[in-house]
Image 1 (tube, helix red, strand yellow):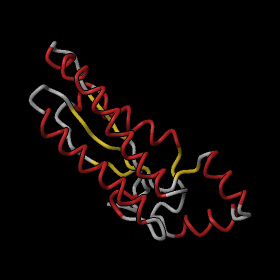
Image 2 (cartoon, rainbow, N blue to C red):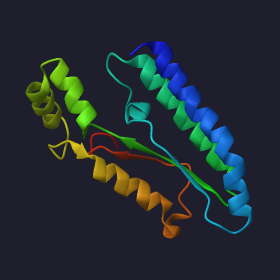
Image 3 (cartoon, rainbow, N blue to C red):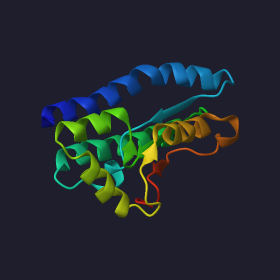
Length: 152
């Protein structure tokens, strides 16, 4: 991926946040639950070998989320990130297949993950759902890794 695409990806997150924040603030002020969950990648927290530009852009997203969470906590509004680690998705398999690496990539990756497996899209979605539940209104500004213990 071209580094400019990564820069544009981070800029898109900021643009979306800028457009949805007024609506979330209005919802919070009206007594409704206001929450924003951004999904970068675990490389935002841990870095990424051979992909420093992407990791830096994603780390910038984490900084933005923490600032927006702090600025809007009194609304009340929660703003968090879910950072997926290695996740078995169709897109991931297609990229590995295109390079003829599927078996090698997956077996090598799982050895380095404490749970010894890749995550699932459903596990990432369940974490997002958790953060949007009413009982989590006191959780804000967090970056939750869904990485099988790879990132803590």
